[in-house]
Length: 83
Image 1: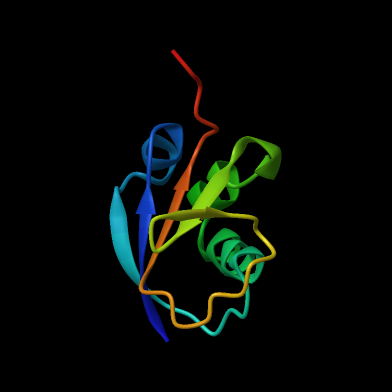
Image 2 (image 1 turned 180 degrees about the vertical axis):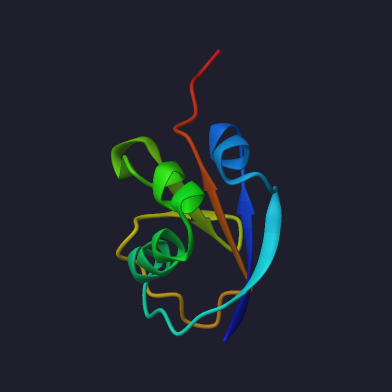
């Protein structure tokens, strides 16, 4: 399946792009992260510390073990801080 992947903040800086269309066979967000890590060193660096990464599926914050299902968009970003 094809999914739009968005990267924010330092993830975007490490990967070098803000978004891309990804063809994936991943069942969960965690599987997608594994696929991305295997692509290139810049993805491996961006996803090296998953304690510092949050994810959203179709604009809804979800845990990494969430199934991709029919999602059209995945976003990865650092934890949000209040203010």
